[in-house]
Image 1 (cartoon, rainbow, N blue to C red):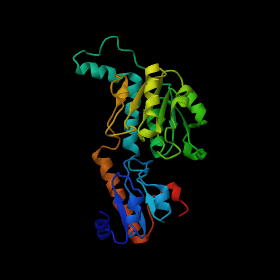
Image 2: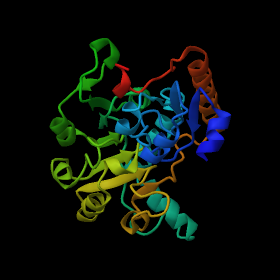
Image 3: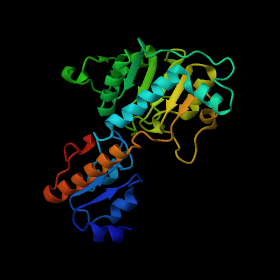
Image 4: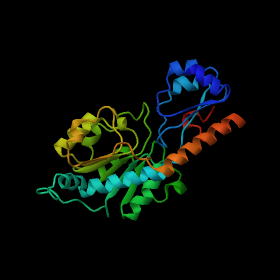
Length: 289
């Protein structure tokens, strides 16, 4: 594979689909002189590239930071509405020819509910606008507060306040060593009873075992997931078999328009790397390179 890459890209870069770029591949791609361009199926996510492996070798890394925002936020909002309204219970009952099921619990309207966005990047900002169209109140937490003119009226709160006061918690932050299992048992304990959790970023930002326990205890009322900790080979049975859980098989960017935009971005990014030695969208961790 490395020999083939060296023939295809003798002095430019490596264009990848989602796969782990580890030390073995980095060591083998010493032919890369300018940049490593990584196409990732998520604007905030480039976890497949190891910082220590690439940065130490002077290899620049780029993701696709804007092309996926709208489509992913659409799925995010779909999961929020579905989880709030308890739609999955009725849909499953209908497929069993049981109409909406027996004693199906009433859902909840989004109007007036507090949406907490953990990670107000491109997708988070897009989601904010969509949620406000449903008259939801939006608050957010980032490691670093956004400039006021970038908040677009969203309320900034601490991490603990976000957990304690959100009716719906949406995870929109990248997966890295700092955010792995950022939501686990201790965090669930700080949340409102019956909270709704939605995740469209990467599965491992949530401790799935703790999530299933929180669902079973009633601490979490419902969940909407597009991503899973061990996808695609294993989805926890406690999620699959729970009728209140909305599940989508990682289809946040699964549209003709968005996939095309992602591909065009990557090709343009690689072209720019070849012609100028710079990238359209270097990852923040390499801002000083």
